[in-house]
Image 1 (tube, rainbow, N blue to C red):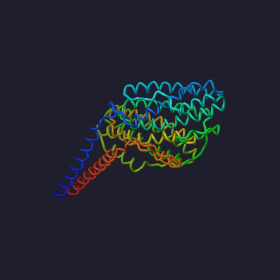
Image 2: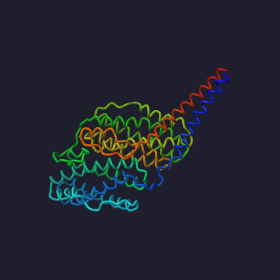
Image 3: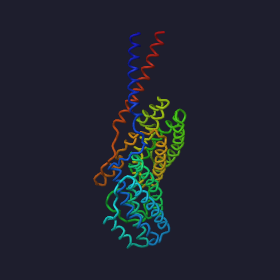
Image 4: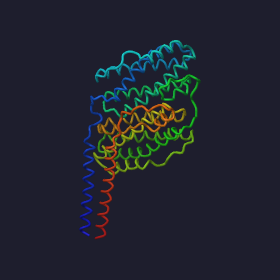
Length: 410
């Protein structure tokens, strides 16, 4: 019996060592809030695309109030002009700081848009302006969120964060004019066609159902994990952030539940098996280990989900799904900022965003070739988390086994 206890003890020690080794590598990674001067191709592509969009959105929006006969379109034009003008100033400052060369001239394609809009007036102008601008902003939203979730350059992260916030606001203003055509919700390179007057509808797409399910599962593991971390975390900043996330996941869940009720979607009552393993990893940790585990798992999960939410926000034709995705997008963006503000989020937690399934499905249906995804999936990080969870579970099992045999011996 003593030999068996010794063997169990040795195995327990081995599991503990594996946990410590991985955790040391996990904690020792570069903090995500540390300044990175390297500009990745995806970062540069984001900045160039934003500059190109601003080059024509600013002038056509400046002229919108004088060409429109609709007060809501005039107000939207002013809002978009101011938003993209301020954004362009920040973009140029960031480019100068990072040494990124941006185009100064308007492309021939964008110049043709400026010329076309200059010939339109009245309702003809309003429908064209609302539709074409909304389609452009939808594509920018997805790219900006992708960049915000994955970039390791803090200057670009700040710029992308500002871009997303502005787009969330102005897209809503534009949609509320009632002049956006359904073609504006298709993220393809083809120019949007102005065929209708209003786009608000109750269409139920598989992507809408998938979005609501994903958001529900996210809250089902994040809310209790955040509540527990708000009580048990060692760092006061982590406790505060976790408490705020727990409360706001209630708000997110309510928005999703209401959308599901209106659309007629059955929502899950449990998180996925993988999400349960994340929650268990947090529950089985304590002290600094818990702080790092909670902040990094939460930030990685938020970053993986937010690109799908952004794509849904840009493309859904369902008003309830649009409202839910808008709420989720706003909160996830805020949560990522709060988690990064703890100073504990590591760079490898920013590398878990893939091309979202919704995007893949849309690209397949539209027949367009998928855009290259410069963000990489941190397989090592996921594997490491799995190793840590297994090691922790194995250690716990062995400790219990030792206790059980010890009691039996007595």
